[in-house]
Length: 330
Image (cartoon, rainbow, N blue to C red; front, side):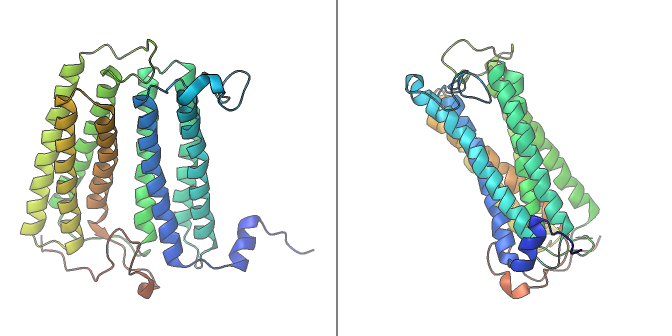
């Protein structure tokens, strides 16, 4: 009796996506993770957090928003629909990675990790609505999205490199400094969620519970961590130059410096202008770009070799695929 093939095996036998297509699908997942953060911010900043009064339906009697709900219902429901787009993009990546020969199981595992994070975060988003925008649940919702972005960036990086045993391209103290920078940036992001939970943009025009802390004091703590992250970034940048690290880590550190400077400007503008919604939204976008830039710094400090189809690697990669420069001794 012939063996029954599952859908992924049928696709794998009928088509062979290129490595470039897999990389672009991974990059599309990163872009969609950023879009979800920004549109989620738009929901809060437009006071549409309770535009749909319940979950998973929009109202107790309707799956979709009604005319009486106005623009707030459309904004909230539109953000929910983007979850399906995100799942479709991740699904495309999983299928492409599974169909690609030779099969790279690490890529499909990372793709499924993204999918289950999205499913879990959808439930947390529903709990957010059912609890009337509880600020702690809102913070957890954002942090899970940051976790999705993290896995998506790692997936993108893995799709652009080979499967050799990882080789460090800089000395251990330099890697340790990069990990300290990553940890400080994670704390900075966490502090940002507390600022959101105490600040004036609660997500709905009606009374919403807030974290019982002084908003300005929490904001100052957030700024203190900004200074720490900027200092660590500049220290790492000069260290990489001093030890003559390969070009990829030095470029990644330079890009991070630029992102932090731009994000700092946006942060001060939003503070002195009284937190206008558009500028706060730009600040949320900047936070995702800073996190991506930090991850790129850490991920470029080790090398797994190039993919077998090197001629394809002229675009779509987080780092141009160039021969790695020898690491400095030490």
